[in-house]
Structures are given as C-alpha cells and as structure tokens.
Image (cartoon, rainbow over all chains, first blue to last red; front, side, top):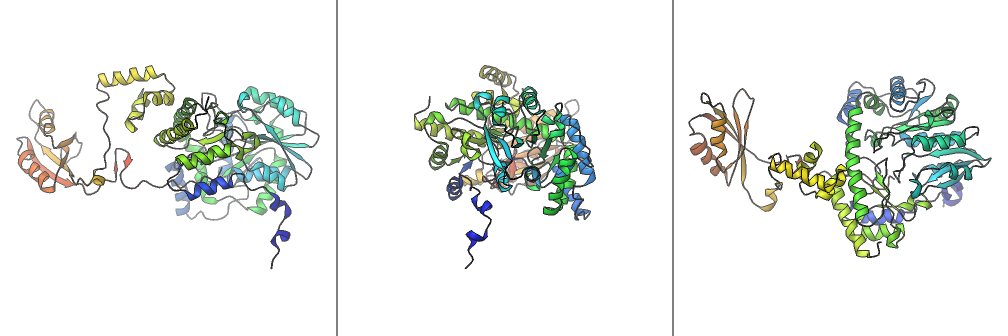
Length: 393
Length: 160
C-alpha cells in the first residue's frame, strides 16, 4: 500500500482547496442553471484570428517555436504595448510569450520569491497568486481593498504592510472580481511609495483592454522610475476572446525576464505554435474587434449595475473587466449562503465574494459576459430572490 | 440613437428603464426617442419571432422568384404594389439578380395552397412574365435568431 499522504509534498497537500468547492459541486448537480459565474468572454474568437490559426496549420507550422516565442509575435507585442499603453520593451530581451497570463504570473512569482519573502496581495483578487507564492515558500500578505475606495489599492494601505521582507507587490488591475481600476493618479501615489525600495511589481494587466467610462488603462510601468521594477503580465484571453488558445506574455527588465524565461524553457519549452501565429493577427488587425466587444460589455455592465441597485443591493460601479461585485450584506446572509440559496431557489449561479479572499465576504461576483437577454432574465430572478428575503434596505 | 434601434431590433421587450440603463440615458429620453421613431415610421412594429413548427401548425413558406415587365413610367413600383396587396404575401423585395426582379415570400396552409396562389393569382398578373417557386423545407435561423436547438454554453464556472 502506498502511503500517499507521506509521499506527496507536504507543501502541495497543505494548499487550501477552494473555499467554494461545495458550491461548485452543488451547481454541477443541477440542471438548467442560469450561470453568471464564468470568468471568460462569451464572444467567439474573431474570425480573422481563427483564420490565421487555421492558415498556419495548413502551412504545417506545427513545430516548436523559439523558447521565448516567435520573433514576429514578440515584435508585434512590443509595438502593441507601445501603441496602446505607451510602454516600451525590446522584443529581443524584454518580452516572452507564455501559456496564458497564468504562466507569466507563476514564473514571475517563482523567479522573485524565496522562502521567508513576503508578497503583498491586494484582495479581493484572482485566486492564483497566493497558492503559487505559498509553493515557493513565501508568505502572502493580503491588503484589503475597500468599496469606499473604489476597490483601489491606496498608498496608505500599501505603506502599512511593507516590511523589510517585502519582495513583490501584485497589482491586479483592472480587477477580477471587483471591476476596480487604478487611474493614473492612483498609480502615481503607489509609485511614490515604491520608488527607493527594492520592491518589484507584478502588474497583471490581463483586463487592460476592458475599461469603461472614457478613461483607458494606464500601466504602472509607464510612470517615472517604475519600468525597472515592474513585470507587466498580459495576454490574449480576455481582450481577444481567446481563452482556450492559452496565450499570454510577460514584459519587463531583462534580468528578470531572463530568469523567468529559464523556468519557462525547462517547464514548458514554448507556447502553442498555432496560437502564436493567430496572436500576430490579433495584435495587428483586430483593434476594431476589441472596440466592438468593449461596447457590448459596456452596455451589459450598465444594465446589470442598474438592475442590482434597483433590487436594493448596493452595487459599486465597476470601470474594468466584465464583473460587477454587488454588496449583499443588507440581506443578512453570508456570501456562501446567499449563493447557495439563490442557486437552490432560483437556479441562478453567482460566485461568493470570499472565493477571492476573506475581504470579499459580504459580496458576490456576477459576470456579465452574457447576452443582454440572458442578463435580463438572470437579474430578474435574482431580484425575485432578494425580494423574497424581505430584509433589504 | 442607432444603438437604441439595434437593441429594440434584437429584443423589443426591453423596458424603457432597461434601455435607459444600457444606453446611459434617462427614461424620458428613451421614451421620447421611441415615440419619435414610431411617429416617423422608423419603427413599424414589434413582432414576436414565432417558431410555428413547435406548435404543430404546419403552414409552409415559399420563396418565389418573379420576373416582371415593368410598365413605362411606373418602373417596378406599380407591380410591387399589386403583389403586396395579397394577404398571403409576407415579403416583397426588388432584387439585383440578372434572372428575376422580385423576391416574394408567401405563406400558405399547404403546398397545394401556395401552388394555387402562384398559378392563379400571381402568375396571371399582367406584368408578370414568369415565376419560379422554391418551398422552404427547414428554417434554421431567422432574423439573427437560431430556430433549432441553440448551441450549449460550454464555458465552465470553476475557472475563476
């Protein structure tokens, strides 16, 4: 008999399973669930991009690429980052292509964090940062972001968590699940705290193209003195509706990129070749497609925010990503109970906010990457559920 | 307000409150715009898209290519107006085809019904020189909506 518990890495076994496993199991057992739970676009990958992928297959471009990715793709990424966000990287030494933004996050944390180091993590936020840090032996230091601050990271909150062990700050904006964004002024205040420290920023900008209300995304790497201490992570999943293609990239100072690339080289070799060819077309020919998707998301966003506020659940107006994060405290229910009851009574699935860190308790994440008709029906049911609780303000 | 028209074209049941939220306008502005569109006959109606097949109603639709000899000074208008007057006719379009002029969609209770209509009433019009009738066997998609089973959402919720 194999004694797996003793054989397997203690560190891996100690990783907490998702706190909302039970909720997913419950949802999976039910038929005809209206889900507002997914974290990916409902749009199909634009046809031009799919066609470019197909064309590469027809031409038998089916071999490994360079470890860092196709040179023409890296060049296209470099031009794109310059054009859209005014940040400039050498395609040769400062950019490489990863398997989704996720791999770039993994590599950046592994390349930076050693046992005993601390990683600052604004929460509520995406679920992958903390476990990777834990696996490297680092310590995760959460920084609560609050609705009254627009779920932004404030300089004050940041300063209060910095110690001499702080190595890395994760900056996940626009933010999944809150939809919060950091404007130039907000970033300037953060940069002011970081300049003159040895802290590196992992700026996860995967939702950079999806911002609303006129102001476009600003990368912290654009600010004075920040480029040398920032690794920008981005990818194709959200902006181009290419989740299944698994393609992202990291851009940063050569010494950091070099070490990240070393791990990538051994663990992954190179990102999928077909996806890389398709991505060149995405970056060079699809600005209009992005604009059209953003317009659709924006209409849905306004509909859903309005629907929640009308049913008496206060809903922060998000300016990024494709989620709203309404507060459910007025119902008297915990996030988990709210979601379970909503699922059982109305067959609508939304995600408990505490799945994204303890500070998400009292909130739920609602994705609006669905058609307007679908959102109308789903929010109607949620409204009926909330009314039936009779405890709202 | 093109966007308002597009939204209503997709779903005429959206309320003014919902439309106002989606467009970032006030309800009054939306109501006024809709009223103006109706008055100016930009919006001509609000029709349900019915999948009759599911109701057991087995009416059939035919697509008819009609070749006509337009009358001097009247062009196609007069003959189109004549064809429009039939209750059986749902759609009349002037086409750019080299082989026919008008596309006419006709709905009837049966093949025979539609055939009789074409033979006795449509083909006999003075200006009509020939017709070619095509019966619709299956409607897969209409006005942007898939009529058969809609594709399943394959996205997974556990990918946060």
